[in-house]
Length: 63
Image 1: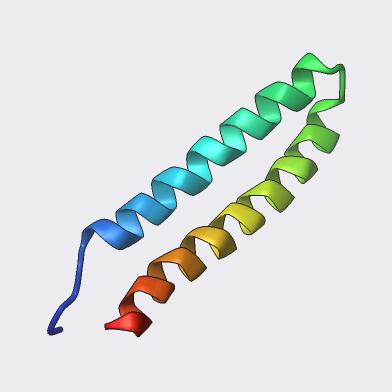
Image 2 (image 1 turned 30 degrees about the vertical axis):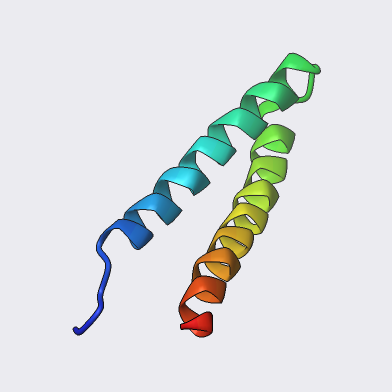
């Protein structure tokens, strides 16, 4: 448990949820159905989570 930062998982979850709502809203504004917008939002969530995780791990590997 040494050097465990509680803010990293919380920040990861927040970024994923904000990305999901943003992508869903934009897709619905362009006239997509809710199912299609949800699917694209899921892909956006996965991409955002991977990018955020890689950025967090890059800073810990340098130390």
